[in-house]
Every structure is written in C-alpha cells, then in structure tokens.
Image (cartoon, rainbow, N blue to C red; front, side, top):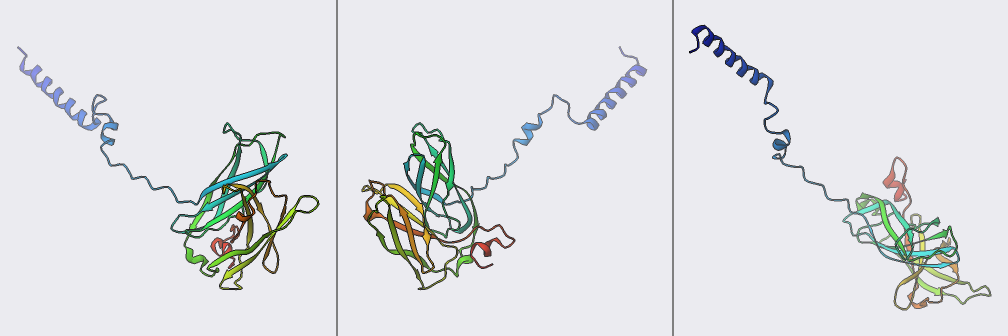
Length: 255
C-alpha cells in the first residue's frame, strides 16, 4: 500500500507529464506529417501551351549539302510571333547526324489556322553520312491576339509559278508572282519558300528564295530527278523577329 504522502507526489508527477505532452506536441510515435498532408487537395496541373506543329518534312542531299523542306500549321486559337523551329538530321537508326546549319526556316509569325512552308540547309560534317529523315519541331512561340496583325492583307499567295529549262550547268530557275488581297497591299518582311515534291506528293526539296522589288520570286537550283514539276509550290511568310521593347508591334512591322 502506497503511503498518502507518496501517493500525492505520484499524482503530481502524472499531471506534470500530461502538461509537458501538451506543450511539446505529439510524440515521434504519432501520425507522420505525410499522412496528414496527403489528405490535402493537390493543385490542378495547367494545360501545356499550344504551339504550331510541323506536319511534313522532306529532304534532298548532294555530297555534303542537305536541302530540306517542311510544312507547318498553327492550330492554336491565337496567333504566335517569335516562332522558332528546331531541325535535326537523323540517320536510318534514329541517331543525330553531325552537321552545320547554314539556313533555317523563315517562319516567325503564324496566324490561327495558318499553314506555312519553310526550308533550310545543312552541311554534313562527314562526307558519306547516311540521312534517314529530317526531324523538325517548334521549340518556341509567343502567343498573341490575331488582332495585332489586323493590318496585314487577308491573303498572300504566289501565282504563275514556272519552272524553267535547265541551263548548261543543269540549273533551272523557278519564278512566280506575289498577289495579295486587297491588291497591292504592303508586306511585312516577306520570305519566299520553294517546295518540290515527287509524283507521290512527298517533299523532296526545300529552298529559301529571293523576292524582287516588283513582287516576283526567284529560285535557281538543280532540280532533283524525282521532281514532279506540276506539284511545285511557293509560299510567302510574313513577320520579323521581335526582340525590342515593343515586340508585337515590331513583329507586325508597325514599330
């Protein structure tokens, strides 16, 4: 039997221990913090930003020079500026082929629903390298309302495209005339792209060309043997890179 005095001290010790537990919080054997946190709602992930896509690619190479063409489409609900297309050459196994990029696609601005062609050129580091395909994708594009380009012509296209006969060096000249709606509208930093296809419609060549002061386009090249001349097309892209303090106005040639 515990003496009354000892019982008093024992009861006091129990009370003090309880108070200490209240001050110090739950012991290490209590529920783990992660168990409590897991019951809290998690923030919803935001949808990835919409960017234009590359829908077709094709190429031709002669020695160490590779000419390629691409077709792109902007399915986003808004326009984009400062668009950038990253292009790689792959061998038949899918490995990247070492090469220097000498020209790249002139695609800077795309309006909603717009489809544009682009072209470029690589020079292979090693002669005899095998090319399996051209891989291309947009690695950047800044969204903006299409109203920023409301002053642009409603339509820009190239008509009367003609492929001339080969000269003594085997080179032909492709020409065409730019027309706009409304007629005679000014063009913001226009860039012309030639796309050649074979009989099955596959892209086999792409090239950036020259635009004259009187709105004609011109390309001089040796046509690949598989070229179907009836499928020759030329497209015009508008817009300029915008790295200024007024980027949208610069892209639209308003600054």
